[in-house]
Length: 137
Image (cartoon, rainbow, N blue to C red; front, side):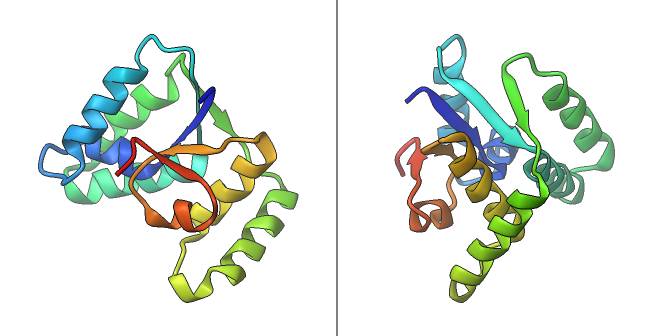
C-alpha cells in the first residue's frame, strides 16, 4: 500500500474516545506515523469531519481539529473538479439503493482519478465500491 485516503470515520474516531472504532483509529494513525504511505483526504471529508465534531463536541474543538488537519505536512488534500462531481453523481445513482452519501461518492471519484485503492475508515460503502478498507475490520 503506497497511497491511502483517510475518511471521516478515521479522523472522527481518533478524536472521540467513545467511538466504537477509537482504538483501531488510534492504532492506525500510530502505524502510519513515519511510514512511506502517501496520505490523502478531501475537502468534503474535512467538511463532514468538522461538522460531526462540532455537533458531537463543540465548534471550538472542531475549529482546532480543522486547523490541525489543514496544516498537516503529511496529508495531501485532493480538490474535486466538475468532472469529478459528474463522476460522483454516477456513483450516487449506482449506489442509490445503499444510501451512499455524496461525500463518499466524491471520494470514490477522486480515488479512481488518483489510483488510490485503500481507504483508512470504517464505512462499508467503500468496500461495496471496490476499495479496500484499512485497517481490515
